[in-house]
Image (cartoon, rainbow, N blue to C red; front, side):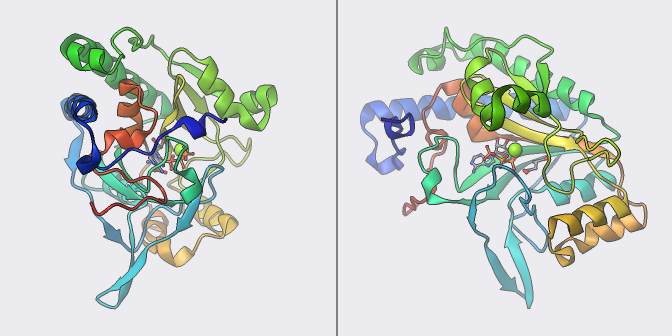
Length: 321
Ligand code: ATP
Ligand code: ASP
Ligand code: MG
């Protein structure tokens, strides 16, 4: 029997027993506390809180990404123009952070129709929320410091103020305040040591969150063409895995164009960002997105992150609500 066979698909609200409702309610309170704590941290540090959008001509290509598994992309015509549902607000962030909102964050619903075979990874949903943020002039180190502070503050305060919920969830003793600074690993070294399965190996071996840098992926993450190194990062949580992805960003026209062409991504879907870059109006920024259901899932010790959703979005499982 594999680990995935033991994972149950979280049920919709109307099918929960009284005990399950109590657990759901505790996880809901942890989610509320987490949202309050993180949004406070960002607002207090001068980040502006933007509202999300659901339909745009341009969204995250989610390609090339070593872990991508998208079954279907949703595209509809409105007012005679094709629009896509938001996969992530990365393109919006880059334009917004380069113009009116130099430091911003958004609680952004992301729709990614993951393959139904991902139903029992416990880590994938077809609709989820990122706390997506971006800062003009920031570098990777700035983002590491910001995220580490946000997570440590959250866990410290949670352990003090949410004792009864953490006890119900059996996380009171096992949830530890992480030590900072988090360790930083280079993906090349992890691959050399552990092979292709490096993500699974570090996830099971670490006891504190760790950063992994230098991961080849979408055109908007910064790549040094001379060394081939990527200035990007993922945050991994112990026994849980990836909770955040981010990067310093590309802002130079020729590099963005070269990478879009190299990735064979449709240029016409990215004409605004290309135009802004060409006119030198795209600024150097860095940022990241935290998967809220994954972060709260780790805190609450869930088997499936859909437990953190009032209305579960499990790949392959569509409920009435
Ligand atoms: P993975 O490789 O784990 O499937 P990803 O690298 O494809 O994830 P990103 O594009 O980096 O995901 O998305 C940013 C963050 O959003 C992730 O770090 C994760 O926390 C969250 N996330 C991504 N895909 C999902 C999903 N299908 N369900 C829930 N959360 C997700
Ligand atoms: N939010 C991620 C970032 O800021 C992008 C993604 O969702 O794929 O890099
Ligand atoms: Mg990622």
